[in-house]
Image (cartoon, rainbow, N blue to C red; front, top):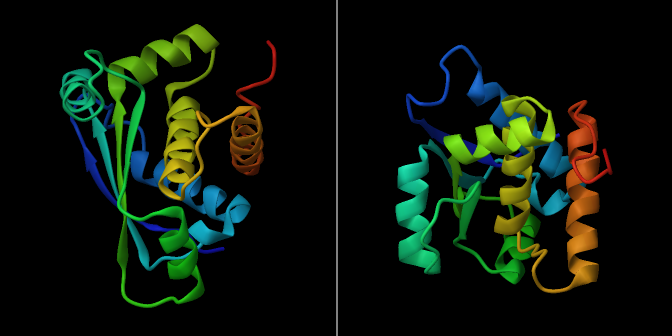
Length: 166
């Protein structure tokens, strides 16, 4: 299965003992397995694994929210352009940017009783689906569709359903 090409920038706050590149690549491949429009290496994604301060600043600047969040996604293509790009492979096209906040991700993982690695994988899948034009904030049906895709992608990685009641 193919996946978008990821360009990673990993802040030193993310532990060097973890192979974040492998986790990100596996998450991208899983996302491409459940959302075929993402299964193209000619689509390029910038993935920044940042600290909370960087995400806070971006969230404030671009979303007018004065706090860090777990993941930000900045799509460069509309849903229609993503689908058209998937149908016509060629030179890499910028799908968008994903930025994960280490502190938020770590706290959320602890709250959920899961590993930071599993939660980061979930956030990468979630962000990639946003870049492909999926949106859980546009209604219950859209949220259910996106959650189902995330659950399927994570299952491919051996990660439990993040939406199941614990």
